[in-house]
Structure formats: C-alpha cells, structure tokens
View 1: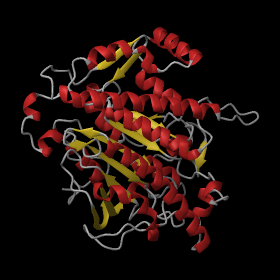
View 2 (view 1 turned 90 degrees about the horizontal axis):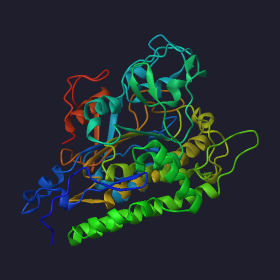
View 3 (view 1 turned 90 degrees about the vertical axis):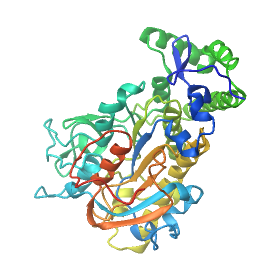
View 4 (view 1 turned 180 degrees about the vertical axis):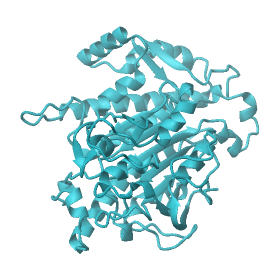
Length: 451
C-alpha cells in the first residue's frame, strides 16, 4: 500500500561529501497518477531520456540488415543478440548523412563520420585550432532541458580523447574523438574512466568535502552508501512497500557497481612508459559494461536525461584477439570484398551489439510505474559510415531502442527512401522530449513512421 506522504521528484540521500540521487518512486507521483491510471498515463509521468551510441568503421551490412519489413522481420546474425529486446527496437534502414561526404574536401571520411554523426553538419577541414562543425543534437537538447537535472548531459567513451593533431587526412583529431559539440567549435571530450564517472555522478557540492570523503572511502574501502545510511533509514520509514523494495534494489545496484569498479581497478595494468588512469579495466567488455551501467544509473536517478557514448573513435585500429581478430579493426574494414575479412568485421559488430543488448536489458529491468526505463527512453545506436571499405554514408546502420514515453511504436524494421537525412530522426526525437525545432543540421523535417 502506498503512503500518502509525498516526495519531491528531485530528491537525494545525503551524507559527508555525497549526494545520491534517488530513482523514480511512487511517492514522487501525484496520487491521481496511481489511482486507476492507464499504463500510458503512468509512463508519461516520468521524464524521457535520450542516448546516442557510436560504433566505429561502419558495419558489415549483409549481416546487419533484416530482409523483411514491418513487424515480421527476423533478426539477422549481427543483431541476433538483441532478441530479448526485439519488441523494444526499431531497425531503421535507408538513412544518410550527406555532410559526412567530401563535398570537395577529399579524404577524411572517418573524421567526418564522427563529426557529422550528431551534428548533421559539414566539418571544416583543418588540423589546426580553427575547428568548426556544428552543435550536436545532445547538446542542443541539453541547452533547453539541462537545468532540470544535476548534469545537463553525460559524455562517455572507451578511447581517451585527443583534441589536437592530424588524425585523418588533414582533419583534426578533435573531429575523430568527440561526438558531443557544445558549440560549432567546442567539443566535449568523453570520460573514459568509470571511477571518475562514478565520483562525478554521486559526489556532493563541496569540492573539499568531496575530496576528503573520497579519500576516506578509498583508504578504508568504504562504500558511498556508508555515508548516506542514516538518511536512507529515515526515508525508508516513510515509504510504502513497493517503494521500499525499489529503494533496496537501487542501493544494492549502486554497491554492486562500486564493487565491480574496485575489482576492475585491481586488475588494471600500466604498460611501460605509459601512464593509464586508475579505474580503466584491461578487459574491453568489462569496460563497456561498466560505462553502460553508469549511464543506466544516471538515467534511473534522473541525474541526467541526455548521454552520448563513443565505443571507439572512427578509424580505430583496435584489435579483438579474444574474438579471434588479431588484425586492427580499421585495417580489415578495407576488406576489398575478402570474405574472411568481412566475417571478422561481422564478429566485431556482433560483439558490440551484444554489449548494447546488455544495456537495453538493464534499462528494461528498471520499473517506472506500469512501464520501464527503456519505455521512457530513446536510444540511438549506429554510425555515419555504412560499409567501411567503400566509405559510403547512405543506408547507414542505425537502431532506435525504447518507447519514447509511449510516443514510439518499436518492434519493427522500417526502410526509408534513399537519402533520407538522419537529422530527420533527431528532429523527431527533439520534438518528443519537448524541444520544438523546425530544422536541425541538414534535416528536411521530422522522420515519419516512428509512431
């Protein structure tokens, strides 16, 4: 039974140098939302979240693209790991990023791919300080909605960002390594250290107190929860049965994430003459999943509603020996129709999709009213390059997961007309979170057939 006591939507458990945002609880909803409310009405009471996840070097499209349209499609080999969330997924074929093409600027498709992915704008070809592309969709949304949360947006990655130098045919490294652009010349570097992300999300407001409590916690292996237990006990006494269970589950998830970060730090290795920050796991899958978990936790607590995640920079030549791929990813993406190389690319694609499925399953497991956190999210996954060998920027590999708070009808494969701008998808997403704009990037209007 729900207690009539009302809890503000933006609530925290507080302790020494710690501010732990609470997940969505029934006690935060008006009673009218809970008495006879429909699933759609209950879902609409929760905030909508947006995330953008970037994969490098395109995809092997024959193993990516479903053959059938509509609801009857079957997941192809690369997307098969998503079977548990198939009904929460849209496969969007036919979208294009025209501004990732040269338009007279010559080589540099990988740099343009990353720079254009969230901006829909043409990057100025320079390796100097005069970089210019455009405001990214996540930052466009953050400028309008960011004041509603502790952090306007969250930028995550698994590659340490580079902002200077020539990374691709005369294009600055700033283009290759950054997805989020606060202004047309100001990229927001992604944080790659799970420990630093965790501390940022759950620290208080006093910088000196934060440093003190963090040092004490690390020195004595104390949990962030130890600092907020008294506040948690007082809160528990005012909550109904359902909310007490949800709070227990949430606090358990926070502690488990702390423990995983601590274990990952124990196995972190530092190569000779190379300083790697503590907290970055050696194991790639562990790193990816920690970052996904942090993003889920940030959404669950409404610490932010907007996030971007660059798995690796476009042009990345990382190898995946644990998949049986000893060659660099970028090297084999120039496959020249060699079937052995294409099979290896498909292995990398499926591996990344498997980690993405883990994230979506996590969001789906978190209840919000009659729905889930995934129902109240819009998660874009893809690239601005289709085939890595031809460097084409049409018919892109793009997924859209989540229900957008009941405004999206997932569980389908939709094919759009050739050269439909991917920026049209962003216009539609912005509208769904309450940011009205007639145009974004190179858009021609909102994307049809999402609902």
